[in-house]
Image (cartoon, rainbow over the protein chains, first blue to last red):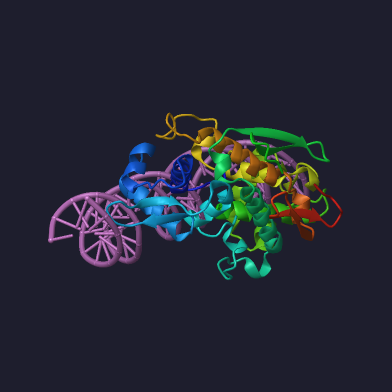
Length: 160
Length: 160
DNA sequence: TAAAAGTGTACTGAATTAGTACCGTTTTAG
DNA sequence: CTAAAACGGTACTAATTCAGTACACTTTTA
């Protein structure tokens, strides 16, 4: 199982909750915690990370709160996950940082690892926050080898 | 960062090491450990899991060892990862098992989570072991929104 | 100016994972 | 027929990572 941390999952829930409301509306950490049934400190922590990632805008003060930094269809899953978990990669060796893996000098598949990570990222970049909040269809396409390849399609008709 | 366990990474190295040799050749856990610079107990553990996943065939006895259960181009990354880490999913809620997540009854994006997992799986099913052991090209395609979408292409001309 | 809301850091307990050890089973060479 | 080499399974321990929390600070507005 390729795992996404629980916190990242919560983060997706939070983002989609904000995205579901009118773009001008401000959401306090407290309100979001109640609406999403999550503990306030956790929500607060996540909103901070999403802010630093440039996905949310914040407004301080007594009438403050958070709003989306961009329109939902311009925020990809890849960005959200990156903001919450750090650089999107399958293994440590596929990041830019060298020397993390003992096998690195002799690793026979190092180069391909990087490419695989990019394929994965490509898949996640295709899905946006606006896809997450509206009904999605799963369309299966048969590739040249006859395998079923699942792909998303929003009801709006957005395709790839 | 979407993380794959270190062990799974080792597993990919092991599988590609076996795949690089003639299909009839048997590989002992000891030999693979030396060739891949990994501790023997770890290698042994991984080979067992890959066997149970149906990706390797084993031969006992003094002249025993492991070989691939199928040709490299019929073994997908998705299968290898599933064998080593369990069902391929982004979050617990996207698996078949219900009731793991407190938010489940009220989770607004539960259904879409499942679909996202399937998209990801689709991407990993497209890459096979044979792709892993030969030079791969990364080809970028622009989708309808003008974004670059990375995709793999083996030098053999295999495409999707 | 006080209250409400965001900002940042640091700590602790829990859960997961990696790594190891041990003992059993199968096969084959001599 | 038996000893050695290799696979097969389980269970345990240490290390790492992650989730969750607490606390002190800054900003804004009624």
